[in-house]
Length: 249
Ligand SMILES: Nc1ncnc2c1ncn2[C@@H]1O[C@H](COP(=O)(O)OP(=O)(O)OP(=O)(O)O)[C@@H](O)[C@H]1O
Ligand SMILES: [Mg+2]
Image 1 (cartoon, protein in one colour):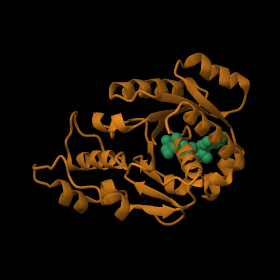
Image 2 (cartoon, rainbow, N blue to C red):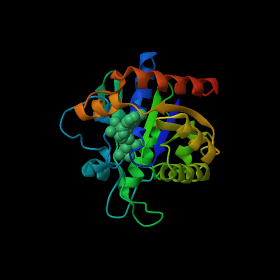
Image 3 (cartoon, protein in one colour):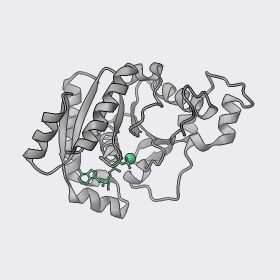
């Protein structure tokens, strides 16, 4: 199962990635969580408190060694050892912090970008693993080839026009690069009215809703793992079940 999670800043992507990963791990699946956000903090959502982790996209020497420098790039560089060598084992899941790629001009073939695309494409080939990508709203890490391997994209939105508009934009980008299954998850829901608001303003299939949850905010303040919150875990479990009913796994 290969899942990408996207949405406007702050809507709850990282929280949902960590909860989904935990639920898959609990049922015995091998899980690789991929933090592909420029300012990623997935490790913290998993309760990891140590000093900052260097994202692999910032490992200049490694990238130079693999992709080359001085204008001659290997477009298909070796990356198959990266998940094993550079991931952390947290709570029985593997976490790979890729980081973001600073945008260059259009069609930028800079080494960093090449490296990250190769790496994500290679993760998609891990047959038995559940791979979940925590992405920012821009989804340019996913080239067409990689996008084909993403079975489902979850777009997270809050009840509000701003995050809904971002969700619609992401859906358009996702469809453009060939991701067919795009679903919405409504997060931070306080009332039926807010559910209706999302339903009325978005035509995409909605997989489910997650309640506004003070406990998650406290957990974030303490730097603890999000899956210690039972209610959130139960709500995300229902969302995961709906993914399975749709026959993806
Ligand atoms: N259901 C919820 N109820 C209340 N707070 C929530 C809920 N889900 C997430 N949050 C809180 O919202 C904040 C942002 O969540 P999170 O980091 O998961 O979002 P994000 O989309 O990954 O953000 P970013 O774009 O910065 O990466 C956190 O403080 C988190 O605890
Ligand atoms: Mg995040």
